[in-house]
Image 1 (spheres, helix red, strand yellow):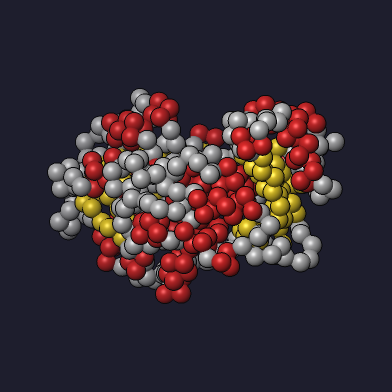
Image 2: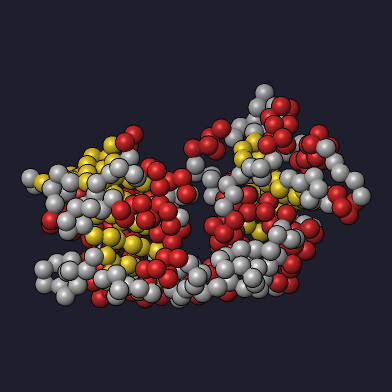
Length: 419
């Protein structure tokens, strides 16, 4: 079945055609697309990248890079495959090699997939010789990986393709590439949501409601701005914390931020009609109480919090190895280390709260108190939160990133009770 696409916008067309012979930008060494989410920049850039590659090269190597290979496949590769096939390309996905073999008529090229999630990722791409590279979500990658990847493009005619949503204004990529685009002979295209013709006004309004504060200015307005004030300012409304809903819950889960000297915060979650509710919590502050609890005592409190409920999964602070081991040793619950990227997690929590996919019930007093106190750091050069009043905030983040967002992930099939 042929897909029906709306006509491309002016900026989308520029991203698609800047390298063509009749373009005044054809001699640029790089192209940078940044701006609002859902503006169509990723799809247009990835399609353009493949078309450009086949216009100049055959039997050559290219790289597609994302923060992780998994996110790269989800956000870029999967949406790209069907349109390419409709245009007559043949694609073989060599999954075990993280490589796409793409051919068109009598030409073929190799597109290697890389994840640039941390400083160690730079070693993965060393030694390659590339004709071009596309870095999706480049602002989320460490500078060492990006610079190592760019150094691989040593073939004559190679170009750099960058795509990202805005971050904080002192970010290295903003200062070294976007502000210096002319100096680096790079075409800079800034996208807004309105630059995507397939996005309806109703959908744009929906995205506008999903974010607030600096994240609204970044992801909806496409601005590089600093965060400040409350992390979740919209949770200050009086109706933000309703009663526990009546009726049965479909499933239950627990998220744990573990502490001995620092407070320990456990959240009990129940799912009803595709919404997860924080229906109870355990919060123990050793400094306030005047004594510390052992791993076994915290485990006993965990069992009391759960009661007779059937728990699908427990996500625990990944640094709490001893407590994770205690839970495993009792062989009663399935436990996994939580995903622990703070800033990405805060974005996910913010979106889930705004979209009412998670709801904090009004009996969860510790969480409610921390929502009113949780603040962005005013002194940090990048996005950072004040490491105070953040224990319930952390366990809520673990729940969203590891349990709620992981419901379709492969590890969840293991989330059954141990016997």
